[in-house]
Image (cartoon, rainbow, N blue to C red; front, side, top):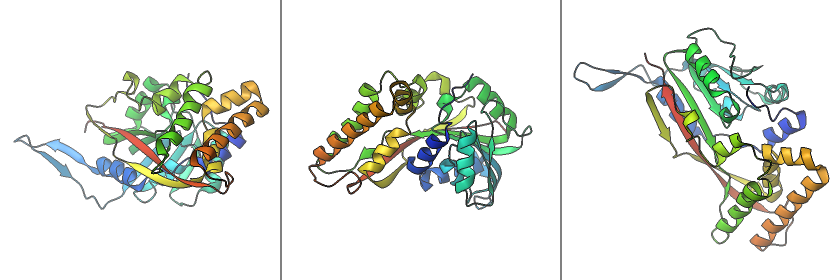
Length: 289
């Protein structure tokens, strides 16, 4: 059975507010790969068929959360459906949705509400480590058209960009996750943040596949907003559920105090901004034509 996190309304709101929006370059790479119909000619040379200017017919974003990873497909696909097992996340996504060709449904990843061979593209951002992967792969293979594409991707801890203290600031984030929250972090979370989906369970079911780790997005945030992002971690939410709000608040306050002291500034967390870089990794596979 798949694990279920990020389901509460308050957590969904935090997720929507602080989680990053995937970069345009990553969306374009996925769509470009999905548009290719690659076949071997008689002399063994790969060719592509189909106009790169055409939009894809239909796509699904599984484990969509509050919709950041769903809406990036809107310019390239005629109909995009975001799916999440959490009703609270889907309600948040619907509330924030500004795209007429994007819709959201409550659905587990292991039983997708689409007919056989009906989608050109299936994506999942920072979510498939919670899925029952064999069941998910089986469903994806059922709903993808021949030549359709599955794209799994995620991002690592945000890296503060600072010419003097970047490494020290990053080590504070790393220490919070690996040490202070280590007893509350689930294996699935480690497989994305630390493992980049390199575990055998994420091996693509299709031979025509690739991995791309060249994409990133920069986002300027206050120290208070960075702390808000950290509260969206499942490990932090597990710690809070076990130890209570006071203990959870203390961890956040200690993190902020150390961050501000490392920066050597006298401003408050709400007044102090820092550029952050989220590095992404992408796995894609194409169903045989």
